[in-house]
Image 1: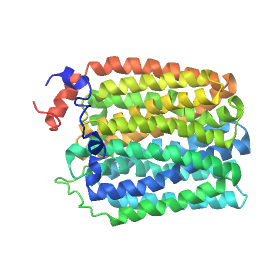
Image 2: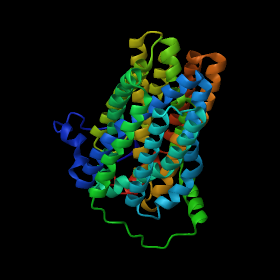
Image 3: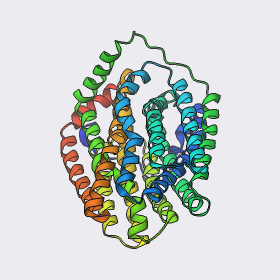
Length: 433
């Protein structure tokens, strides 16, 4: 097989067994439990996210403070992710997940109590957002790396990762719509309470799993040396380096568009919390389509080309959104942006997990978290500040154009390392020589 074979994309897309191929990772009991628990919990997570953004904007009427709260929610992920990655490669990932999910449940209950007692203010929302960001710094690389321990067949790994994205975006379709209606009728506090209760499902499913801990054949290096080795490995291998760079760039210039949605819903579309919920749900529709497409693919071959096309689609969606002043066109633009964003992110996730060495997967995925979540707060501050100066539509337009430029540069760079990807796939047994 030559490089053109794997850059051309998926083969056999007319296979009559597409449906069974989409859900093949669910054959394993552990992954099936995880899928069920996460499916319930993520709906609550999305409800909390929409309710939080609307609450902050209602309290402050400031796009900049929306950016500040978003910054506080994820800056801890950026700072702590490298340390978390080393621990994920050393400790029992199953136990880490039980702890992080339990702490996230407590955070949601505290947030609900603050809002329901009428004591919500920007300062305590920032503190609670920072607490959740700290939890996510350990939860996300653990969850990403834990997938390979839950999946019974190695060839189902890419399918399991894509199904995770499908689950995430199915919840994105349901949670914001429900949150928008609840916020408009009852208030934000109930959304936070429901999110706290939803964690019971995922914790119960984690406890029901039967996991055989992976035993390392060699001792671990000193902590900071392990961290340095992870950085050297990730940035020394060009395909991983380019993927991380693309994610970092997108997190600064495109993904933070979500922080402006409350402003866009209120000032451009003249709507309320329900409008925000429907906009977010529209992005969820596009994202779900993209995730199902990734899950239907037989393997990881051709992901580089798909990631480039998805990044271009993401940028075009933001540009269309910047010009729209009617709801139906805005929801179409959000669907395009949602599709492009999730295929870029989930495709990159799948690529990194497929190509990374097993003993460094936690550290590689911690860089994924840094790039995807850790840099987004800086982009949120940037988008919030730009929106205050030049307006929301112009900020969205700038983000879309920059996203297009980044996709073109990434496509050019990645085309030069296809041979390295091909060799790595042979080495890991993904393709035969």
